[in-house]
Length: 271
Image (cartoon, rainbow, N blue to C red; front, side, top):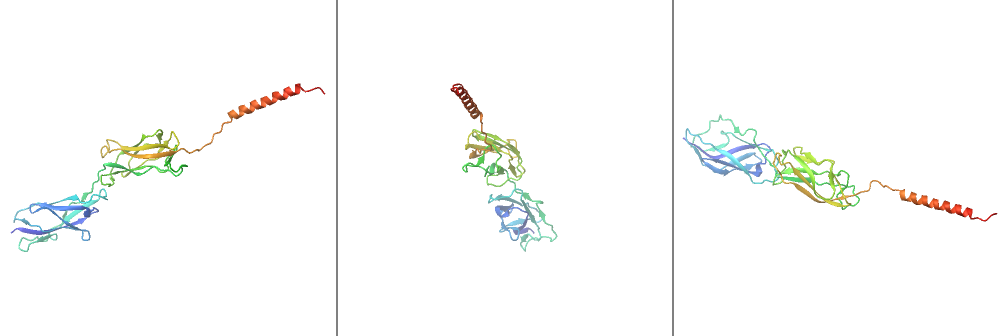
């Protein structure tokens, strides 16, 4: 007698975003049938099936999946599926029944959500609150008060927490010079530059920063990013006053006064 199954219920667990994934049952008696996920019951139910396994035979069924929503995913979340043949199948009363002594099977520790970075994102823009001209974003010749922070995302904006690479900072345009720490290794999630500064050639000088990864990095060569229209305020930190010309002028004045006095003395009438 054949085993006739009209419904399969799979238990779900793990940290994965099951609501953002369409899971399908596929095999000889089910051609990519989409399941219905219940967050409250932690189950995935496949209904309307016409599975019939001949007596003494066997059939293999697999669950495949695709994202129906790729936004707000978390890297390395897990998707764990398990099924107990004694409780997870709806079987026709006129067919072979399960033994009642089956143990649940699963995909072990689960399938992980994997996010691959395709873009760098400047998460924190350089800034400073010490400028005199408030239309300028940073102060020249001192480390940015707020240092740039770079993250690696996929095309949907999801953060790649396994991204390991070196990020180099440079100047795409501007007449000044970039100094400080210009290359930093990512700390799994984030690259925070420290002590970076811009030495402006002119007050209010405009410049464009660029950030790029290594071509040999874990995610390959990701396109560089830029932050345009930053301006550096040149702030006076020390007054220097030269007395050289004043001293020369004073010496000449005193000398002239002395010569005049001597001439006046010699020309005075006798007493």
